[in-house]
Length: 101
Image 1 (cartoon, rainbow, N blue to C red):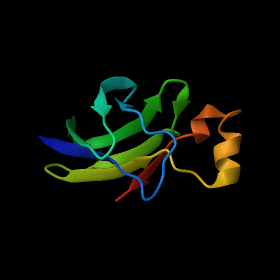
Image 2: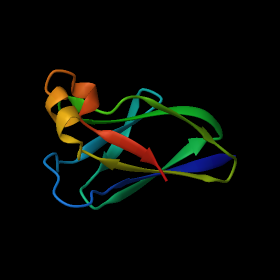
Image 3: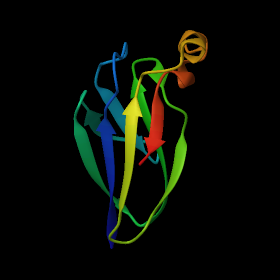
Image 4: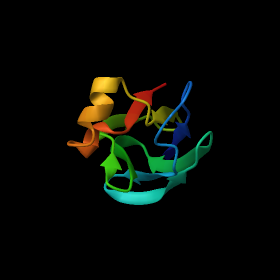
């Protein structure tokens, strides 16, 4: 059976990195999510890796467990605390964030 991975691109306040984010599940691009949009991707139950990308910017790779028939939800954003925002120019994997909901 399968589960659903739900990803919402949402930020509170101003966000500099407002473009579409590519969604990568288990190292395979499965689609993209627009600002204030949501994407739902069917996945097999079990352990999966998730990452979002926008050009050279990306999030860190997150591992999640999908239960059979369940929904795994994340919120993604490019909004970062100023020191991390500045550091992301040298380390692009700090640019975007995935938050489990």
